[in-house]
Length: 182
Image 1 (cartoon, rainbow, N blue to C red):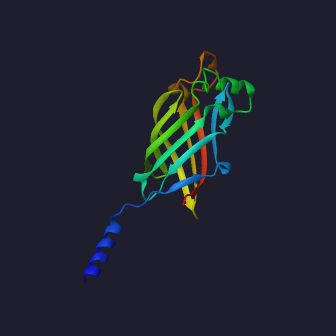
Image 2: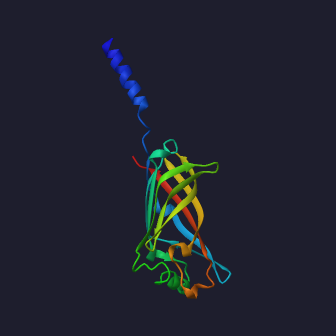
Image 3: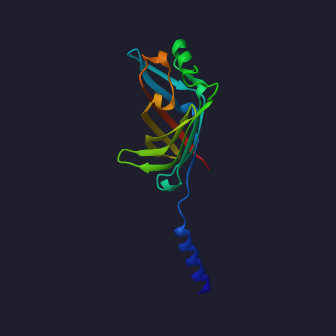
């Protein structure tokens, strides 16, 4: 009788434990961090080659979610030397003084179309609250997330007086594939 009562108590305690969070290991070869904008009316796109992301996310336990991404600002490239020089100049991302840009979120919410990561983006030493919408598909221990959102470069002090023909906004295009960590 005592053993049955202890087993029942242990079982009910196990049921009341919160669901565990799921960590993910990013597959960098299958993932990308890009951007799109316009300069002099023409489309410009590029990517950042060097970045890291630490992701804890379980759609059934969003309270334990955490996303932290860090980007090497010097790794940004468009393939156009003149544009790259401007982007990486002191008036641009200024990787000499600001080696990384970061996004940190501990507030992930489900929406009708996917998810939103509410967090803080830091670029050029400026912190801005940001909402990153994303879609997420999980199948057989593999997660695929896509995000596309626009930021105002002036909010982070990016751009100089010679940037008159550059659009005021930049769209970040993020594709992440990751495997469930064991």
